[in-house]
Length: 222
Image (tube, rainbow, N blue to C red; front, side):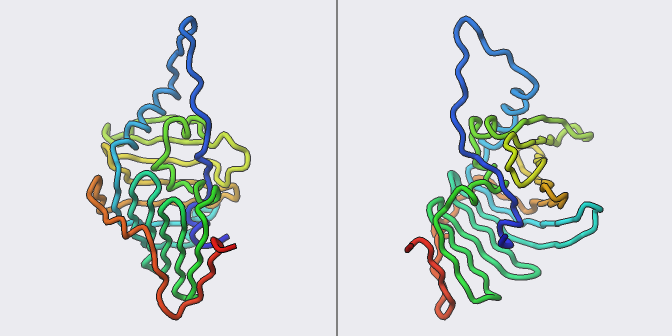
């Protein structure tokens, strides 16, 4: 598994639409429905996102395995730019059709089609619709002790998910933290700092031209 995919584990977000209630049998809202509505409402308030990210990976015993710093740019519906700055350099860029991954230490750029494996990464949940989230997760919500922050717990419905549980913590409409635990017990926490929401982002940030002199592995030509 590449460092990028290991960073984000996996989640499927392609699903059928909700079943519509009949007139004679109106739907009864549940706690899960309410939590889902809250989460989707918060996600819908952010069309673009810029943030510095601190990522911490720990083992089952809580021992730190890796800490990285990165810069995230996101523009709905499917544009992402993830640039690791410490302790190594790595860049992943996608426009929702093509994925470019540059690993300077290997002097290599990999180009591939945006596929379901990448679309299943937890960070892509930020672009998820209500239909997608409902079909793929059981959602619960809680207000934190400060009475301001909200935490949402998502548990995958699919048995082949690479993580067992994920949480998202919001301060108002601002995402502060994302945590998830994979099937091996590894725990990953992403803290979002210097968050800028709904600011213009040049679409050129979501395409990539490999630098001269590096090896280019382009699977889109197969």
